[in-house]
Amino acid sequence: MRQPVTRRLQAALATLALAAVAAAGGIVLSAPEASAATGSATGYATQNGGTTGGAGGQTVRATTGTAIHAALCGRAADSTPIIIEVEGTINHGNTSKVSGDSCNTAAGVIELKQISNVTIVGVGGGAVFDQIGIHIRESSNIIIQNVTVRNVKKSGSPTSNGGDAIGMESGVRNVWVDHTTLEASGGESEGYDGLFDMKADTRYVTLSYSILRNSGRGGLVGSSESDVSNGFVTYHHNLYENIDSRAPLLRGGVGHMFNNHYVRINSSGINSRAGARAKVENNYFEDSKDVLGTFYTDAAGYWQVSGNTLDNVTWSSPGSDNNPAGPDMKSTTTVSIPYAYTPDAADCVRDVVSRTAGAGKGLKVSDGNCTAQPPTEPTPGPTEPTPDPTDPTPGPTDPTPPTGTNLSIGAGSDGSSKASGTSFGHLRDGDLNTYWSPAGSTGHASIKWDSGTAVSSVVIREAAGSAGSIGAWRLLDADAGTVLASGDGAGTISFPRTTLRKITFEIVSSTGSPRIAEYETYTS
Image (cartoon, rainbow, N blue to C red; front, side):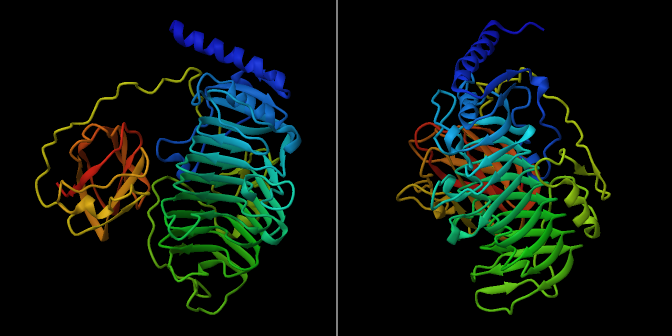
């Protein structure tokens, strides 16, 4: 099929741009089929439209951090798919800022900022990010695979990425980190921070077949007790070894941990707090302390446990700021998982993780029967992806409200940062003269109940003077992390009846300042 002239021209210009920035050193163009990225995303990274990274895009080879940045900056647009194969050692000395319309980079850190559709994969003799972190910010659909990131510092010299090996923040969506080795050489007093951190509205992330070791902090979801808009993170077939705490720390949201091997967790492991809910199943905990619970806070979190093995695990005594789940681990909540998965039995986790986890293991995965095997090749994406529609079918702007009682009246509400002078309570007060507005052009607001409530339609009413400002949006089941509906423009939203405790309206784009006067919910 012949490509339209404009698209063929864009592809040619992108190739020329990449060739031009190759002069930065360490970048080699290659054909898409030469990519070493294999397998398909798993866990929560399969939700919200899935995670495919740079599938279908051009493949380039990079041997310096500058070349990685140059590859990002040489694309036709910040969403043009690209697969960057990395070989060799990436460090401060070979990582400079590169400028361009399709990137926003900085020296001393691998910067994946305000971009989408990117795969970074280690190839050949391996890829080592030495004392330099990978920072993902305001980005989506990212894959990082088969790389080692080591000794990233937040203090001392050199510093990078706030001390995080891999850090994500500010509206990040759909990231799959697979077969990586993330390691430090001590804790905060030695200048290190987290190995795998997520904050400021980061969602739909999977960490699989990876090693996290020799660090004071394994990682967190949420930077404070008020940063609870993150979540829907899967951790499976990972090795946590010689970690003091945060394996991980969850503040709000949902985490799913299965088939991980935890050995020498020195102070605390899975720390579910501030309303977080963790599903913890078929893991192997060994020679460790306080592997699950709410620690260092009185803001409780919750967990559902099954099939775990505890091998020489000790527990502290409960206190006002300590609520260990053991020694008799029992569930305190239930967590529904929206994706298919086949966990291995806990008694083989040590063996299968030792043969699959980490960089340089041939990207081997478990078949669910305790056997390591090569990854299954995904169905290849198109080499010329179908572009997003530029003129989506708008939602109704003058809706006929559903019948019945507005369930939002008397319910609770919360959301992302709000504009000065507005209130979450204005979403559900029945008064069209009051409104909630996000602090920026995007944001999210939720209606919540104390128990499961059946909802099948929502009405979003914009305040006077702001009609038409809401552009693209998504409606989410905040309990399960699934998308109930998506579209463009305010109005009535209908979807299959769903029982939930919290429903979230997310503004993805807008013109001007969006203002929601009423966020109505109905059973029918």
